[in-house]
Structures are given as C-alpha cells and as structure tokens.
Image (cartoon, rainbow, N blue to C red; front, side, top):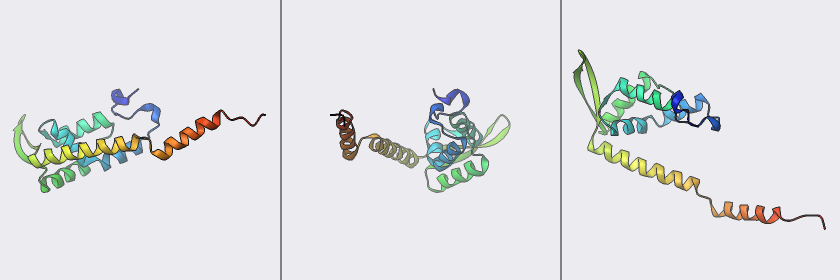
Length: 140
C-alpha cells in the first residue's frame, strides 16, 4: 500500500521514517524541481504544494527558492514575473538545457536502479550454495 493518500509515495510497509523522507527529498530537491517543471510552468508556491502532496514533506521557502535560483544560474530554468489574480508571481520554466539535463539524470537514475536491483554473480553463487546445502542433512 502506498501512502499517496497520506501525502507521500513511500510505502508504509518499508518502515521509512519521516526524517528519512525529508532527507531524501532535500537531497534530491534539484531533480524533484526539474521533474515538476518538466510537466509545465509553475510558480514556487505551486512547486512546494506539489512536493508536499507527493512526498508528504514541504522543504519550505528557505530550501526551494535558493534551489530555484541555483537552477536558474546554471541555465536549467528561466523565470518571469507575471500577474495572476491581482498578484505578481515569478513563474519558472525549464529551458532546453534543463530538459536535456532532466532527461539525462532520469536515464542515469533508472540505469543505476536496475544495476542495484540486479543480482551479482557472487549473490547468485551464494544463493545456489544455500539451496544446495538446504538439502544437506547431518543425520546419516
């Protein structure tokens, strides 16, 4: 069962603590923001709401805005001020370079996950050994 209804994607049965979730979101915040902006333009508050809904944790303005500014300095996103509902808001959007880096990171993460999930030759040998010895008995 996923905790999506409770505001996070981490499985309940895994025993992942809220602190571990926060740390993971903070460590991957650049990538999370790029992934949200890959879906379309968004202002900072909407980004924070989406992160909270998906991960059950809001990193807050003190983490999100400096990350946005850093991504903009690197040329991965652009921003512009627009008026919405009588308020000025800064809306962020991926650049071509940002789309490329997001696609690259996505592929690399998928590849890394596949490699981590695959069984190494040593693990295969150990499993085979365990299966062979499970049929062994000391009783004569």
